Each structure stands twice: as C-alpha cells, then as structure tokens.
Amino acid sequence: MDVRAGFAATEITPSIGSAMSGYPDVRLDLDWTPDAMRGYVGRRRQVSEGVHDPLLATAAAFEVDGVRLVLLGLDTLAVTSAFTEAVRDALDVPRERVLIAASHTHGGPDLFAWWEGDPSAAPVDATVERTVAAAERALQRLEPAELAWGEASLEHVSVNRRDEARGPIDPTVAVLRATSARHGDTLGQVVGFACHPVTLDYANLLFTADWVGAMRGALAALYSGSTTVFVNGAAGNLNPRRFPFEERLNIYMPQTAENYPVYWGGFADAARIGRSVAAAAAIAWERAVPLAPAPPAGRLAEVRLPLKQGAELTQYLDFMAFADDYRASLSGDALPSEVQLVTLGPLRLLGLPGEVFTEIGLELRVAAGEGPLLLAGYANDDVRYVMTDDAYVHGQYETVGTPLAVGSADVLREAATALLRS
Image 1 (cartoon, rainbow, N blue to C red):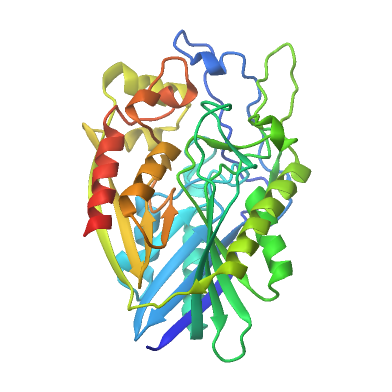
Image 2 (image 1 turned 135 degrees about the vertical axis):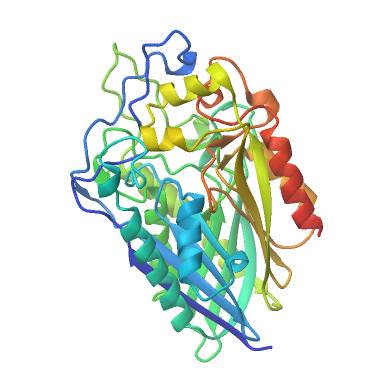
C-alpha cells in the first residue's frame, strides 16, 4: 500500500487586547447559584495583556492509496459546528474524513464572542483561515511514511474533580507516530490524553496553550523537527492535580472573599504537567508497534441531545452570563450535533462533541473492544457538559453549567457505540 503522512502548524494567537475565555463572569448573586461556586470570586474580567506561548492550529494528514484523512488540533476553548463546517468546506477532503478537536485551553480567546466584546471583532474568521492553511500545508507535505501505534498509562497528573479521592480517571496516553519512509526521521505524532488544560487560573492574562504547549515543546525537543497534534479525551470532569501529585488534590483551590486572591497554578505547574504527559507519550512512542493501515474511512452520525427547558435553561444562560448570540443558538427540545468515527486500518478515531464526562469515555473504551482507539473530546462542536444522569447533583457547578438535560449521555453513548460496532 502507498502510505503517506504530512504534518503542519500555523499560529492562531489573536491580537493582544482581545477578550479571553475560560473564566467567565458567572452570576453569584442568584438564589440557585451552585453551592460549589457561592464563594468564588476569581473571575477574569480583563482582556489579554500578552502572549506566554503561541496558540496553534496543528494538522496531521494521512493518505493511503490516494484516500485522505485530516486531523486538526486547535488551541481554543471550543469549536462549533459552524466553525467545523467552514473548515471542511474549504478542504478538498470529504467532510466525514476531517475531524477538528479543540484542546480546551482556558488561556485562549473568546473565539465566538460568547461572553465578551463585539461579535464582529471576534477572531473566528481569521482562525478558520489559519486552520485551513495548516490543513492544506499538511496535505502538501504528504510523503511516504510508516505509521505506528503505542499506549502508556499516566496516573499521577489528573484527578476526578467530582470525587478527588475515588473518582475514576482515564490514564491512557495514546500516540499515533509517523516516520519518514525515506530517511527515518519523525514527521509527527498525534497524542491523546484526557485532562482539562486549566493549570493557569483566572489571574493569567497571557494567551497560552496551558500544559498542552509545554507537552508539545518537550516532544519537539525529543523528536527534532516533528509536529505534535494534541487530542483531548473525555475530560469533562478531569482536572490537573495540584503538586505534590501524591496528595491527589484538584489544582483548583476554592476562593472566597476572605482568602482572595488565591491562585491555584502558574506556568511552572503547566510545565510540570506538560513534561509528565510528554514523558508518557515518549514511552508510548518508543513502544509503538507498526500500524497496518487501510484507506481511511469516515462516518458521521447526527445526534439530538435533549435540552433543558424553561427555568432550568434560563438558569444556565443567566449563570454563565452568555451574550445574546449564544442564547439565540439554543431553542427547541434538543440540541443537534454529531458523533464521528474515522478509521485508519485498525485504528479508530472517535470524535465526541463537548465536555464528555470520563465515565462515559471509559464505557466507550469497553464498548470498542480490542484494537487501537483514539477518543477525541471537544470534537467538531460544542455542547458543553455531557454528564451521566447521576452526575446531575444539586449544588454542583456542571449541573447548572450545561444546557443538556438528563438523558443526553444515553443519546451520545448509543450513537457512538453504534458507530464503533458498524
């Protein structure tokens, strides 16, 4: 078989002074404010003041016997279905074989003006253009390649923020490696791991990819000249752990008017977690076994995720302080979205929209059975938290912080399982 791979990256950092996302000015003056947030005073009210590390659109392109696949990783909080379709429309690759995954960094821009600023000044159009450029450059760089797949386990850097002591995490660090068939050099790697990039807190006003940027830098030092495409997993309720990791504590530290300001992380913490993920990825990289590819195939399954109604939906919109454009996007009894499955020989890439709780991701790993699986959360669309029914607990942040109603996890799980078994 004729197997080719190409990688590329373009910078998508917006101008300094742009609004940031990740820590919106949530409402704390309401009777139904979640108990877990009542004392919270750490909200980001200022615009960006600089750049710590560049935000990137990274692209991996694969071609087997003339059939192409593009996988994109973006340093943004989220992507929308409209964003994804704009990128897909600009590429000469069938839409079912283009997957876009946001890293979910909380140090990026308010890309769609959901919270702050003028929608006409939001950097969405420029980000689409630069994302397309990364994909086209990766396609132009396609060259004969050898692919390999490896996995490692990383237990110490993530924590289930709903249950720090006993809650499940997904420790899998997965690597799809591409090396040149001509000279053996590393072309790039796709790295998958599930953990919120929220090491930097609300006090940070510098654009940053958080620990994901540190991870990419460490791998670039190990594999000179290579590009890393990062794919976050089912990380809806997984946060970085606070150092020292053995204490198994959420990096988030509750902030109240009495202890303000309390900051939970800095760039040293981001670097430590990034190096840890890179170290596990390097183990997976070095252990990787050859992947016998077949021409890639893709399938898209439409899902209609049940929406909250009435007062519950109003509470969500008011609590999160969403702007009018976002509010107008929620109507009816269900939120349409999609689940995507792309195969590359035995490798399956499963794209899930929004912030999927890790329990759902672990169930899908079991449903997938044997064989390589790369779970991509925050993929192709944003639907906020997708939670198991028992996670809708009064007083918890995510319970109010999602527009989705009880039963949404079942809909997503059924669609994803059907794709995996097809």
